[in-house]
Length: 107
Ligand SMILES: [Zn+2]
Image (tube, rainbow, N blue to C red; front, side, top):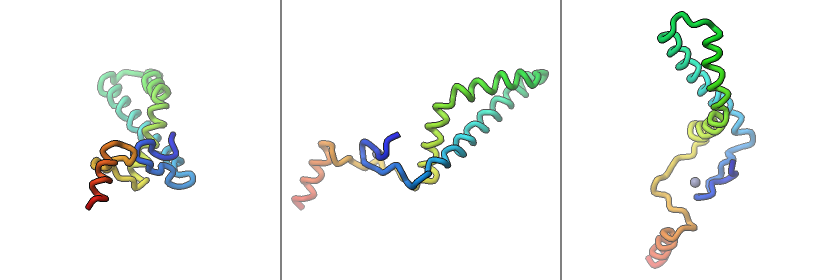
């Protein structure tokens, strides 16, 4: 993970140990996944044993660890990092920004 955004330079290390909280976001993602898969099994296959539940639920959790790791961090930044997305932001190192600076300095 970058320490700062390569496009706009936004500092992504909000504070020391900030991303420890991403574990809880990842935990919430896992709980949601478990509940969805359990509900599908419960409604679709009411006779299924606990081993079927384990066989259906555990592999997706293991396979989705990289996804969960990254989206846990993304969720942490969005929910607790107080970084807001600005669709009108123009990076300073791009052509359009130089034109904007030139017109701003002539005014
Ligand atoms: Zn950025």
